[in-house]
Image (cartoon, rainbow, N blue to C red; front, side, top):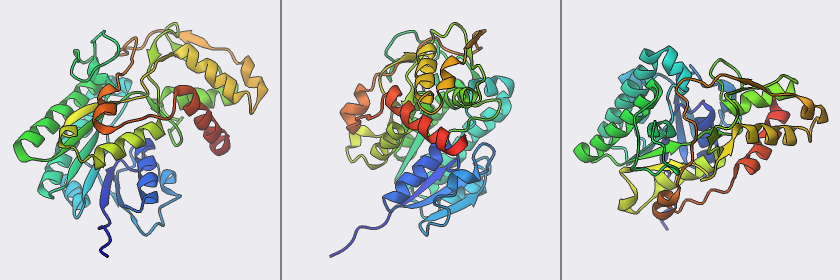
Length: 327
């Protein structure tokens, strides 16, 4: 009896929040996993649980360096490209570096993957691509004009991926992430995501600052839903399911006021005094869209996507992780 070949996955940005969760998941499924990271936003402590795993290999390198990309893809079957500089405000403050990483680095990875004859290139796209499109829910083939340099870079990724599919036959799948949250998401730094930042502030009895009146809404997406989508995109056998993009979300929306209410409720189970922490309201943030809600019908139809975690279910898991790991 011939056993199936053990496949090798390259996860760029594998020391980051989403990347390290993907590394852990696929190692658990007995894949060989290579992590490429320059640790500009990723963390070594995200790798501590599996750094010694014989199926895991860490390459310290930068996607802006084509030699690093070529080294990383050598012998690789699948690429899960997560490496990027996130954050709309960061891109507004420093559009050149955002473009260098998110566009030039992305192109390097496409070229290296093409030359290495990688089976499939799955990449992190972004809901920011919908830009000023006002329709809800967001459907993949209806987008607006980008509202930030970051959004431009993520849309350019989709354009390059499509061209590489058509011109070179490289199989690509883009996953438009909607406000991903969960374990290992960094609460620190100027560009920290809202959920871990609010969790840490509430645990310290500090008032979280909401941009605007708190009625902006988002389709918050728990990390395990994102892991499911990456696996489905990587393993899909139906040719109609590839060389396209998918919303990666739960398919529901909650306001920032809802979010804080849930956070206080779940954190109060650990410390009742958190219930009394007040919220501060500030100015709306440049580049932010008022409302975000994904249609996940396409992912359900072509990939069999079935997200298991709503915002509330994901927050319960995330809050427990933060309390036990960062308190």
